[in-house]
Image 1 (cartoon, rainbow, N blue to C red):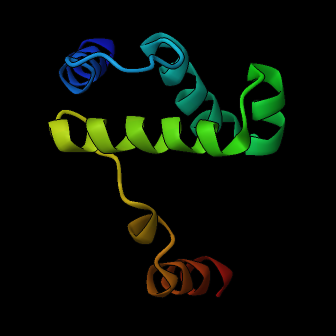
Image 2 (cartoon, rainbow, N blue to C red; image 1 turned 45 degrees about the vertical axis):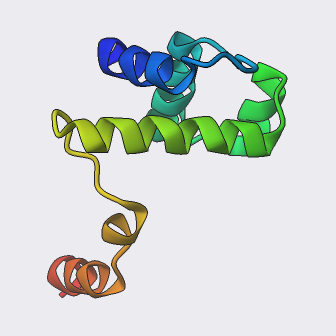
Length: 94
């Protein structure tokens, strides 16, 4: 995971520019968000970054890992598809 993200980060920042948090920290943020279902507001306070920056990092990690085809990460639309949720609810509540 770290290798894939570092390669993308280095190719994106070849020309220089402002560097943000380390790739390792960005992975930690994304994993913490996915696993613990923490609010971005409180995570932003812990990492001392704006909520918008935290969101940008998490989305970047998701996109790079999804594009690599080595990880199966569904898009938000797929995860919260109302038709699928309705089928699940009907299946387990009936």
